[in-house]
Image 1 (tube, rainbow, N blue to C red):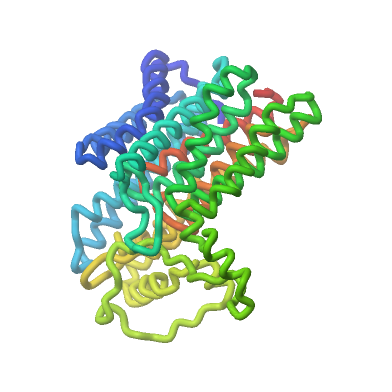
Image 2: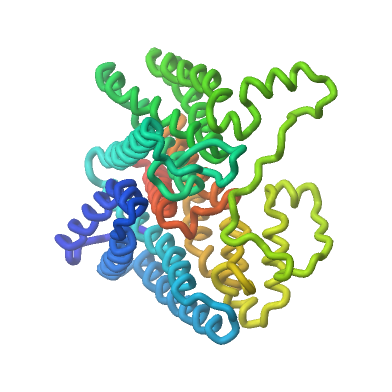
Length: 462
């Protein structure tokens, strides 16, 4: 899959630089969208068009053939999908359908683009730290915005429920921002730990602390889980570093952050939402009659249109404990989409029912991305949408299996964790694969992981 950019070299260099700089402006365009300055959609359309030019300009090879063929198949399918729903779906909001199609296609195009871009810049000096640095800057910017919103009381609530705490600053979606922070913190913390001078570490430390605070303040399990996973991996990394290289500064910093996190959680938004606040903890300890792990189960985020009783006949839905665990409180939403799917025409079962299924009053989602992809795009669409993820995933695994590791490769572990968190957040909480804001970070992490694995397999120790 070596990508030779000998043709149109100046154009490709310019586009590669543009796509790297595009990473840096992501939080800015999301803030502008929050304040109703509509440039995010224009920039993302431009990014898709630039991605087409970039991929079409690649020299002949397997990767260009795969990318161009895949995009052709994808857009032919999306045309059939949309046309079929024009015939069979009623009611149908054409602007909403087109917007959803665009958002889904955006992730897939950016995935192909960033795999290509990151692989090609990997032959330049300091490429590894450059991508990490850009993500660090983004996470610092997001955290500062959340801190300012906290001070001014202008943050958008993460939940539409009084019992739930947390805010997402000047960003629209708490779920999307959670996935961004959980993924981004993997690269940001790795970048921080790899700084060798004490002065630089002290300068960057407030931003790292602010990132951790933001992941607790947003109040979601996804961000909190990401923080825990990253700190756990960082502890392993720093202990390994201390034993092997006699460097103890990072151990002290990571242990301190773990302690601070443990102390802060009970008084944080996520502590309240998970019933880990100080009051409930002591109440549970003092009462032997309450069930273990007291507190209500976390309600799923508000769906895009609650289900009126007249839409779906009341039927007893029985799920196994494992299915209930996987659905994570979304069994009613899942049941609605199953009902729509079972009663849809065969063409919609194959090509998809479109955004939110064959609803009568308002669109409905399972809010678990892979399930939503299946119901909204059908059997054929799901296979097409999953093809690049499955293909790149299998190549990454093959490279890792073939690679000869002389020692633990921590950049590979941190970036792999970020990619897994992004996919996991999409599966469990949704709002990743068809949401441009977090989707581009997932594309970056998968492209980064592919490059690390490929270069490791070829014995190029990056």
